[in-house]
Image 1 (cartoon, rainbow, N blue to C red):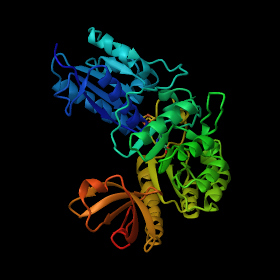
Image 2 (tube, rainbow, N blue to C red):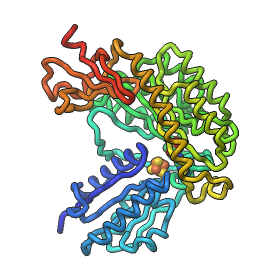
Image 3 (tube, rainbow, N blue to C red):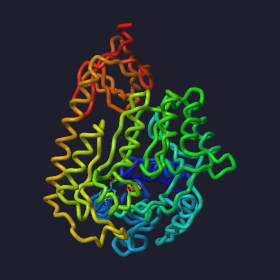
Image 4 (tube, helix red, strand yellow):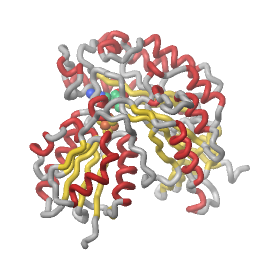
Length: 443
Ligand code: 5AD
Ligand code: SF4
């Protein structure tokens, strides 16, 4: 029998990255060996994203490339969000594809592989109506120190611009017991940082009788002996409660960083986006964090050019940036998506105008970051060592606030530095990162 090999390429968010880790583990358990190029693989898997049109186009571009390069006998699988969104239409657009499966069907992956191996060239996993999460003991994690843990899958909100409810199905929380078991196992395996994942972690609700809410789960994960850092993403402001800030304040293992996507600073636009909060309600949550004992860094996502966004609405977003003073942000030009409520809305903003607004927004944010980062010079931050930049002679580190902090360290011997936590004196700043010197050689 010839060896079973696979190649996987992942697009999109951390949920997708972690799904791929589970898919890789599942494939390995089913006897497949991972290879580095699609050419060397018998099975080529694309784990896809459809959040914006550009992401989706990238996938279809890959499928086109594959068609030209495809040799007889290779099996092509499209999984993830484009697979769920397009469903069997993928077979029409790309007849050389043999498997189309969304994330709500990954539990059936071993069974789908058996069908592929039996020669079936139209295998699908597209049922969204599930109460199950994809729990597998076979996860192959990419990073040695930081591990992802899914706590909730799917999304029950219906933001007017967003495909996720259509691609990932309804919300399903894992039991607290299974999350705690996974987190404890990770610490035992040498991990010291975990990131709790979900489209909306704040609406986590333990389905077991223990009935933990998100703040309780977060706190308990942070109290596992040996756990140094716990992060979480992503938060929906509507479900972000004060107890989360209190948990961070009372538990140093919880990172002092919250990503709280606002999308717009205009209550009128927020209403039309169906975000379920006003600007004032959002700002109340920011106040909780600003009043906390710990210095919590706050980051966000912004969409510019949502249908009907006027110059005044955009100014309200700029004004919000000044008021919150985010530590960092991601901004996106609104991209019309299939099935969503915003698709048919009037007053679509022209592309050039979206570009103009985005440029202004990024300039304003850059000035805020330069100022905020410069205030950190002379302070000492704890950095987790994640890598080495030989060209600069620096170690690559990250602070609890999630800032990149690269630093020099006297007498360091390579391998033993990785995964260590070190106090670093911040000596240089930039808009996106800090640089410094390890205090270990000084102390
Ligand atoms: N167009 C542009 N940006 C979008 N996002 C989600 N859907 C769209 C869309 N249709 C952004 C939101 C979200 C982030 C992950 O992607 O800001 O928080
Ligand atoms: Fe992309 Fe959203 Fe799917 Fe993540 S959940 S892969 S961001 S469409």
